[in-house]
Image (tube, rainbow, N blue to C red):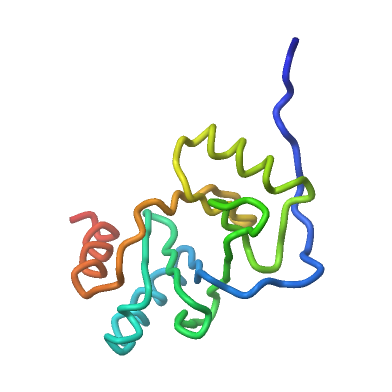
Amino acid sequence: MTIKPMSWAWQSRRTPVRPQAAVAWGDVARRLHARLLSIPEEQAGRLQATSNRDVLVVTGVATDLPWVDGVAYAAMDDRAPGLWLPTSWEPDRPTDLLGLALSNRFARAPLLLWREPAAVVPLDRLLPVTAQHLQRIDAYWAGR
């Protein structure tokens, strides 16, 4: 028996969910990084961040999340613990099944499933936002 891969599409959420993460790509990620350097230490202490060469993800309560022009937002899906989705978009298939399939495929959790650019970003290396962590991200982006 052949099992076909799960196919799905994105659809607009009927009701956007409350943000739990700021997600920034490319130049917007650099601006978000700069914004993190300027926020009060008390606020930074309530946030966590992870990055790769293309994206910076900052998690925390909505009122603590920094804003810069171009940042988008995400939240954990209530139906699929360990799966984070954009606050304004959702898959047109059951997210619990999609979350399970992605978790099995990537063998990491939690995961951020992003619409545009299409990506799956592991969130298992979130660290507290500190000056040292932000310096490591900057050095990584600079290739040092």
